Image 1 (cartoon, rainbow over the protein chains, first blue to last red):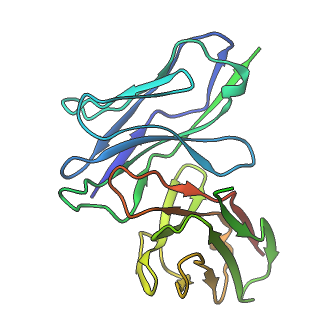
Image 2 (cartoon, rainbow over the protein chains, first blue to last red):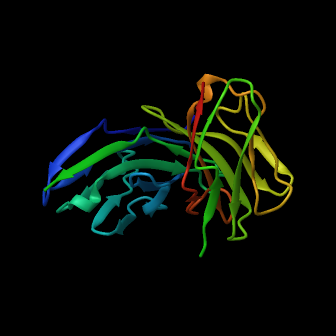
Length: 117
Length: 114
């Protein structure tokens, strides 16, 4: 079945450091890929997404590129801020074309990120 | 404001006492889903619904029931809660299932079963 493997946390960085959180996936067909963020005490919210190979999703300074050849969707940010402290989840959803796994998001285990001033 | 609401936000109960966690969305979404979040396991799907009166099991359905009588509501029922159901629960919705669509999550319900 589909699966997502995410970089183990927790991750602690200083403000303005460069961030990478690794994410690789196993899936049938051509899934859509997502990064969700969970701020303390809140539900998950979409950070960015990519729906086909070589697409780059971006939002709030974060970026991730859909790499089909390496089945990866690594999250990056050039200069993190204290307000980026949160838990980050990589996830995938099935392709509408193949109709595989359309009924759910498959999540990684989450990476807790703490940014210190 | 477009949102998914859940109630209660926090609940402490005892083994075997039936409970219901409500979920409601105001976006006219067809698809709704329940997840549980546990440390080291990420989010796992419990049940989902493709539309009114259409529900199906997710990855961890044991001990849970759901119903979808109206488009906006998707309650999660624990008929006889046990301590291994202590978890953080999230309801989510999207216009239709899967593909490129974003899922919108509620704020979560933290359940403790003693």
